[in-house]
Length: 60
Length: 232
Image 1 (cartoon, rainbow over the protein chains, first blue to last red):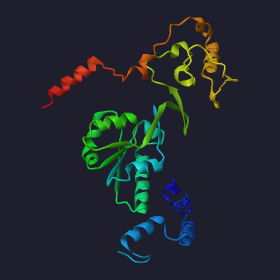
Image 2 (cartoon, chains in turn red, yellow; image 1 turned 45 degrees about the vertical axis):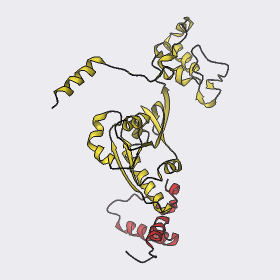
Image 3 (tube, rainbow over the protein chains, first blue to last red; image 1 turned 90 degrees about the horizontal axis):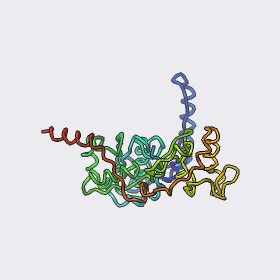
Image 4 (cartoon, each protein chain N blue to C red; image 1 turned 60 degrees about the vertical axis):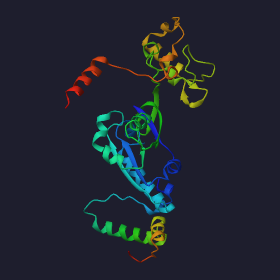
């Protein structure tokens, strides 16, 4: 569905974890963060920053 | 229930892209059951439209709301101020809801986000099948409870055509021949002989071919008017 609006489905994932699985959660977060870093900024981020004239890393 | 299917996203975007304040308006009855236009779908579609608007550089505010039914006026009342704050309502109700809201909303356009398909049932989660055509002249007592008006591709009234093929219809191997089903069912019910009775030609004017239909239950409509008169 998200590919319909130009978002790579690799940017979305779903995990099922219990509250007792902290280490696994941390592992998933690390892996997922790495994956998103490799994919780079999302088209939404780029569009919003293009409109506001900001570059990556800059805040309003 | 009424079964609908959400329109393709690009078609929806083309319809709404020139409006500034769009409300995606869901209906939590039939179209929610078929995952086309309930509150959940309204929220998802609103989010997708916002993402699209960002990427297209279109300035657009997209909100969403849903009510239980779009076919009775009292359900609209709590949200009408919110609805009227939009430039456009993208209704995810069936066509009944789009018509009904259009008559009540004033000068705000109401566009359909759903294609209303048919009256159907849910034999299995995610599968919806057409079982009634709303023809206004039910003959299911004569056909073993299986409707030839809507389940036969030709709406034949007198048995199967030459296109019946091992219980399937000539239009598709995925479609059962309604008259095959009728005959098998009536055999089981022991009523097959009833099909030999000569029937007069069917009156089709009770269906879509006789103009818009209206039913008035006078005893209820009259008491409703009295209640309205009592209100200050």
